[in-house]
Amino acid sequence: MTGRADEFDAQLAERGDDRPGLDDLEVDDFSALLPDDDEDDDVLLDEDAEGVENDDAEDDDEDDDYPEDALEEEIDLVAALYREDGRPAAIALPKDLANDFDELVEQLRRVPGDAGAIGIVVIDSDFFVLVRVRGKRIEVLLSDAVAANDWPIARDAADFLGEEIPEDEEDGGPVGDFAMFADAGLSEFELERLCGDLDADPVDLVSDIAEKLGFGPSLKKVLVTLDL
Image 1 (cartoon, rainbow, N blue to C red):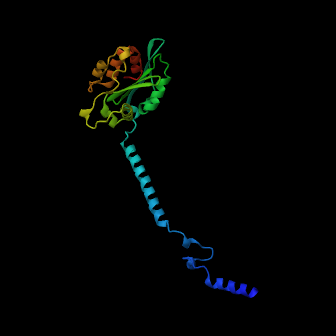
Image 2: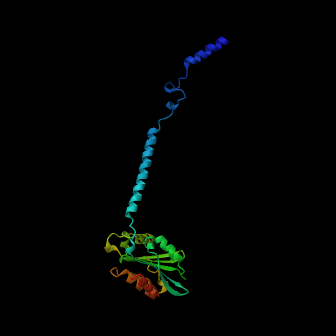
Image 3: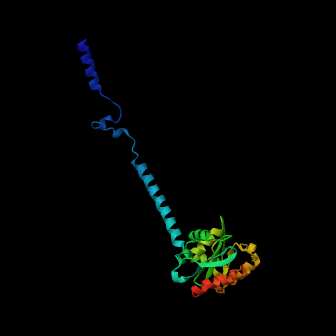
């Protein structure tokens, strides 16, 4: 029996394992049996990289399109109007709020007004933004939509309103919630008429609006402190 077993083992040794690819194998090296995926991986990596580059390019385009912040000397007025115990009042707000619409809204929510507060921003004797905040309700008016091409607060106001931004000055004009003061006695028609004079000084316009809302003397005190 021993002789037969030796002969059988010898035959197996001579035949070996004839599976394709084993002749190219080194000891414990099975890479020759695996599919070559390197080329596919390279393609996927290239596509992923291209996608990231395209996303970055779009982000850069959006950043390039967004206006630069107004300089301090370009900011004419940032103020809040409100009523406390029924009496009209006005306060000056930090000028940097003229470049941050969201923070302006948050600051107006903190003003101790009986029925919310009205924010006023005037930039470069060019345009103004009015923001009325009453709890979760926010109403906005931008005196000239063209300003959204050059000033961040105007861009944010236009975006909040969902307004398209005109490139041609002839297509500009006031946009927003013209009925925002209807409950205070200033009609939609009258407010739109006041905002329609694009050649008027915006500080004079917001003073007229404040006067009709009963905040004339209060805002005038703020303007005097700012030499406006």
